[in-house]
Length: 163
Image (tube, rainbow, N blue to C red):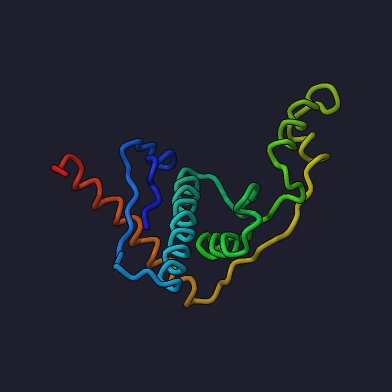
């Protein structure tokens, strides 16, 4: 799965990118759609990995990833992201992260002198999700990640072709 159904914001910044699903059949079984669901969750995780890889290539260190919103409530989403990124994930204790962010910004400069200090006082880490670091899991995700990168490259090669 290439999850670019509405273009790509990062890291390509390519509004012309389009979604792709490889291996579709006429199978309408629950098992097939479960595989498509898992592949879609993994594809989003590989997109996140691509962003992290680019950040590290630019000299930034990413030791863990903070998660908020709907994905942080989904066990499959959390574990697949941790495994694909090979980094721990930390969820927010606050279920309404957008509201917390607004409160943090509103507290500066009245209550707190900086956003960083407001975060230190107002943010609480929730659950931590550790990646499965086994060689098999790493190899599995590396192969699928490379396949997703190649799907984007293949799409670039077909752009402009008649539909």
